[in-house]
Length: 379
Image (cartoon, rainbow, N blue to C red; front, side, top):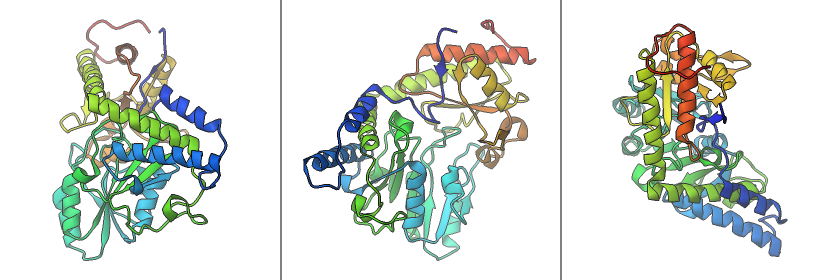
């Protein structure tokens, strides 16, 4: 194999060249954005320019953008700072939401889409004020949720709606107004920005959000601590590029074409394969592919040896594989849950990467006793 094929963009996208340039430029200059001298004002300009670009990506007001250390902190800030003690979250949320203290869980159907009727019943059955958290797109399956419908139901019962859009930012058109979300989470490194920086975006920039980090007046007293200027500058560059790509249609058309090609060829080569969530609306870049009977980790390790980087559908902890809560919530059996892998594409993905994956994966299937059709490259 002539080159490594990186197909794990949902875990983290490679930094785009323009992002690297923005980070390096910011690193080369001194200045605390809270200082009033010239260098401080220059740093502040970088932060505010990035804030405007992130706001543009999701059609929000710059004043509503709060920079954080990443998506996890943004989720925590929304859930802890909104002032609602009752938290209702979907069964397929990221662990930073699903495991945030006591929560009530909205079930999903077999496609991984939330049950809106159940959400309405949960809100109607308890008059306490609540915050509802529904992700825009799932990190394992790519399934897109009906966030706007959930927001209408939540608001009809006096609840707030938080949307974790970390996987959707730069991949789908996202509009705070059209979604009806009160809070929206973004993560830079999912869209080719640097790791360690994210944002919580408020629909109402004047909302009295209680900070979870104290000790400074930064971010309009909503998040204490000196801003990560290089990271924020890179985030702004990634947001601008992501918006440009979406406006031109590059992201959705290009990645969906590659994803659909990968899935159709995978099923043609290995008929026993299963595409999880295929009947639902999904991110254009994500495929959750199961090969019943062949452990996820076996596939991940074998593909890694072949120069192809993907993820297991289940989370890993301390060298062991934990059952995927997402696939379990969808009602999938252990043979699917234990054999699912995630292939995720991005801004630098090429047809050759898909071919590398297909050759290595179908050859692994052949070696482990699966019936394989078509021509398969040698291992």
